[in-house]
Length: 141
Image 1 (spheres, rainbow, N blue to C red):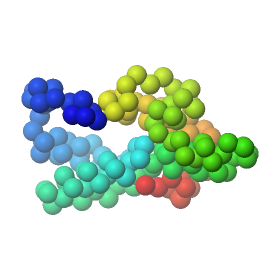
Image 2: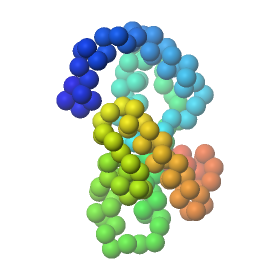
Image 3: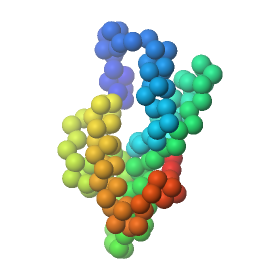
């Protein structure tokens, strides 16, 4: 509740966790996942899916890692160290000129991360990162 502001009455009309996990497994089958600090989400999902004897082996791209790589491989800037340290989703939304309504709201976080990734793809292409293999080399979670 502290982070995501979800109260019991917010989720009481939701679907059962095992149904949600089954739908998620089906939706992500064979896909590459993208997230901001996505290793945190992957750890939580692996724990939940592990309880049901399912494995989460999708490749995952971390937009935070992608941003750091972009910074390290772009023209040097005097404030590079500061930029490397401040890579929260809110901070990157500002850097990439993205509107951000509410941090730690699942839908807002996902939407901003998707838009962030779209902007990063363009910057990565400019830096000769053009294939999935290249992206996984520099930003794999």
